[in-house]
Length: 251
Image 1: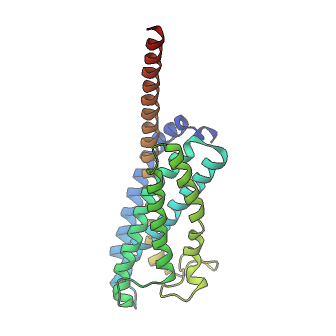
Image 2: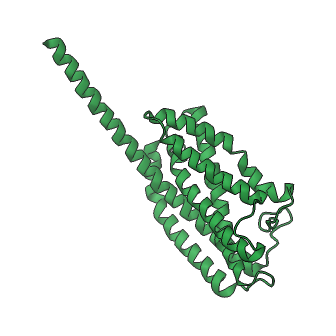
Image 3: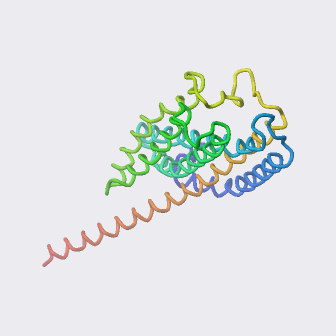
């Protein structure tokens, strides 16, 4: 496992694992959609709109998971100066932001027939919107400095400070009276869903998670390649400058 902490070790691991993750995500999401759309029954209160749950819940899970990966990687970068950790955090941000946006979009579609409005300043919805803004802030800070190192440090600090919002999202329905329904999947007493709904939901969560990890590996490999190209360019610039100084001294 120590080899995974180096860029070269990660690239070798990603090349071996990525194809299996793509296959697993396709099979799990395909199976999940089959059960969600064709086998799972409509809800006695929500009717067919309950099927939005099979996209909404996995998206919410990946939005929080993506930020958690980003925050933990940022901590590793700041504390242990791991060269790969910053790249993992940077690669996770856009993917997590997309899942967070998808969660908010599907939640809005779900909320309109259930609550009579596209948006309500509900504790869960508001904290999820804050998460999206934190993603945007992280991405903006990463690109706000000419020096990539300074941008990475500033973004890492924001990621760690914003991590407090993740448990707020999770427990908001327990701490405050909200329009959002209480947790029905991750409960101490066990899932409250009927197996006919729980099975496709778990398949979709597993499929989305495999998809996230597969995309993350592709993006990290791209970041490693980009870092190598930047280092090569800097080396060439320094070589040209050194040659110019040497010519000037000789002249």
